[in-house]
Image (cartoon, rainbow, N blue to C red):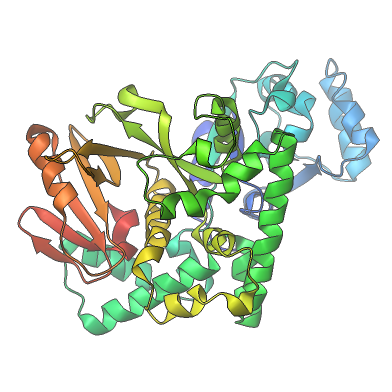
Length: 443
């Protein structure tokens, strides 16, 4: 099923502005809906199109990319093999799962220069060494990222086109929407946390209205990711690091503790594995900013980070993967708003996902308290203009924000808007905005 996705408008902008001067590369984790979105775009925006899916392309198709010297012959053979007539400047050629055919990606340079047609590529694990070995990567690519469906897209999928606009209006006006509306929006958010934003899981929910069926779909996706991680790293390190994410967040450590997951390993030794995991886009990584300032990337510590799942629906299933659905009380607890305090890391993962979907890179900051026995932690830092926007996340309606206050006192000249993300309605507390978690993607 083709769902409404925000990236469609960005793809349309690429088509209109670039007019064939670049190919479009859609990146994203597996099963986020890249192929479906691109196919829908091609059907709506072009006279004709061809889709070459390299996960099942024939030997004939693959052989075409071994010799690109004669493009007239290449296009003649392609159209005849696929039985499609391409129209100059009105057709698009799609390379689906392009990481499986590096020669096709290398050919983009020459195809774009030729200028007859538009080109869209989709792929995951695009920077893994074996997928780029021996080829020249094209510079003629415009790149877009497709994330799991965000909260707005989830609302659209279940037939609600109005809530996202009302929510945006309430955020802009800093409006108290009232208890009844807030409770409904929080209930919708908790449903989104359980189902998640993977299109197959959303489709299963719409068809069955049964969270057990949704859970089965999510377990299948997690198994697919496990298989991919073993392709990335045959030693199993990536798979073990991935499986341990919920436990690491639950432990509330200042950073991911590699040594507690992998024996005789430390965070520096697994750097390349973590980089490949990040490239898979299955995980979101928040790096510690050693000197938090507007240029957060300049003080990023590559060996000091937290790891989240890119989709919170998958996170919930991964956290209880060792139990059957019927034993998984987190579903009932979340839906009934009885989430225990020690499950608050689910909300932290959700905020990471919402901020990432809105185009933000993830950073955080920890520093010792006055006694030195504990640490303050600002869960997320955003750069806005010449200022920082610090965010502290609470899994409840608790309004205390000691870490946020201490951080703002430590760096007063660097602070812009400051936020406490929590589960109650929008409020102000002096200079701090207490923001319901469903609005976090609007910051």
